[in-house]
Length: 105
Image (cartoon, rainbow, N blue to C red; front, side, top):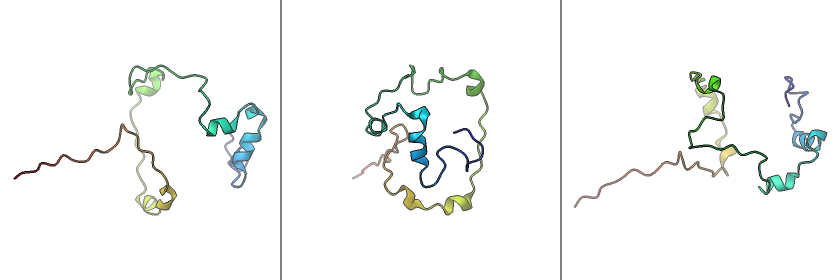
């Protein structure tokens, strides 16, 4: 998975990359059907004090200044939005609430 060249990297074959990973000896004990059915408990679940708790990360990374990558507007305009047609998840933390409207008589 860490091979720099994507043509040699495990799982990057366009037709059977998923199969390559699932059949690799390192992953032989994984029950992929249970994972897909969300029936597997994570081996470790970190404790957090709040939604914004970063105590499980090294301070070296949490104090780094943010560096935003500028968007390529042409690239965004050419993305096929049909790729997201069945996407329905909305994180409730970021869910947009309708604006408050006042009715006057």
